[in-house]
Length: 500
Image (tube, rainbow, N blue to C red):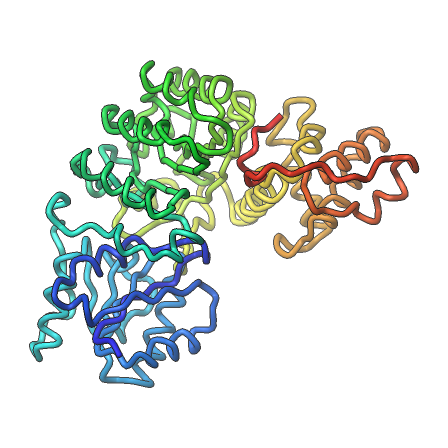
């Protein structure tokens, strides 16, 4: 039986909540009567409520994010109907800025901002019988004095989940679509502290680290020290960083070149290559430096790259987006993440609503429905485009086959035609098996390519993935003497393999 349950619904089982562990670490004397219990989105809400209430808590603190807001809303209602005396406290990005577009009216308390100190004080008052204001706001914490969360990753977490790390909070940039831009002041943990925490986790067996710093390579001395730490290790590991694309001085480049394949992943925020559009949303682009650095990362390192583009930015036409995608594909064969613009409460992107006719959904993830340059029907096409791009191109399942799609260099135009055709054939963007997708690709590609070439290319893609069987439609198309022996699959996830 615990007085305080800390919980959230993570996007995947492999994820773990750093925020809950921060709250737990800073509960001081209340920690002994507290417990972290994590769930995954789309789990039955009543079952989640049942498991929480079985612990008979007096207080339930729930982390609310864009991906779980609707589920949390329903969870709060169930808890309060079944156990009205249980105090429900909400915190996290989705309740830190108004307007709230999901119904959280049944929650007892809502904390906005960094909750490590405010949540502790609130729990003390609740358990002591004192009444507080329903809405509580944190002006931020001293990042160097609060208790750190890393000791509260369990052995199970270390063996089965990503271990999230932050060496800094805040962001020095003002991009209007991003919540991180609200906190412009950068705050860093002392370097010796973060290195010490990394070593403790390493000794416990942690090998899968995801740094949540929004701009890992802003402070080069920190970036170098952390990279040096991992370069000193002789065992396999995986590390992920979010980086800005225009700040790779020579000394950092030389270090990045030293990392072996499959261990380093860099998420590179581009969003747009159109300087006018970037300026309009207060995103500073040093375009030539960005291109130079992307070429370096692509050609001289073994890092797996994620490069981000956004569809629907104010003032950006489909033609401009198409040019962005074509140019990025020419620069790098990395994973290109296509995101749909969202209007998050607290950001300043809404200042463009009238001028550019921006219309957004009122339900999570608050994605754009249309604007003055992209009507609703075309925006729906682009959402399907992004989904199919992820399945076909980013997945790594069809690396050679997609080259046939782009053989003339018209990346956007050709994939747009394919995505329109594919949706017409499948009438869905979900639950399409790999074998079915391979058959769709064969049918589409053979309209303009030799059938034997297409069949052999798709077969090469299929055989590059260990454990896969030959799709039935291919068996009648390939030579009878073909060696069906499967190639050995690299231990790395196929998304992290170096593209040919």
